[in-house]
Length: 274
Image (cartoon, rainbow, N blue to C red):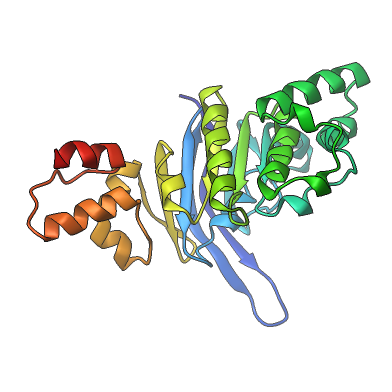
């Protein structure tokens, strides 16, 4: 698969009067078109700072990042980069700009100068994608947190981006809202979108094809969810939870149960216990 995003030894320093803070320290990675990559890390690990480099919201202090072969540091490339890499943040209220749902989804398209008839078509399709067509004439203030987040995602879908970066999109949602969003993310990936998903919830990260673990501005692990999350002892040492089934299997093995080493899901655990 073609690498759509490539970071080459990037570092980023936040400048302030209280002293500079190094947030990224020599990060290199490639993300292929069509991948579903989760990025996890404790607070201050640099994961959100890295996410903002993927569509040029931040530019590296050192190193280079390329999107679709274009250097994000070159200003003339930024429109193409941002048309192809959309972002969804953790607080949907901060992303809503209009008083009516369909107008909010249309906002980005209007800024691109898309023809009105095309805007209507794209908005209707995007709302259908996120199962929010029945709410297109609602005021966003009347929606639940999960519904607002789906509206934010619809706005990105309508832009026809190739990549969506989710920066802790379920952090402010209840369990039902989280389930709705991760189900939608899986569906978008199945449709061919490249997904970069930043989360504190390990069950969500386990849905990805690949998990990147960050610590103190560096990538310390990059592997499949199975390899990452079934290494329970190491993950706990790093301060992470692991999916419930992997944790339970680990505890049962310590109690003497003869179970496979790489159990990740509840279904696999149930089958092993039979």
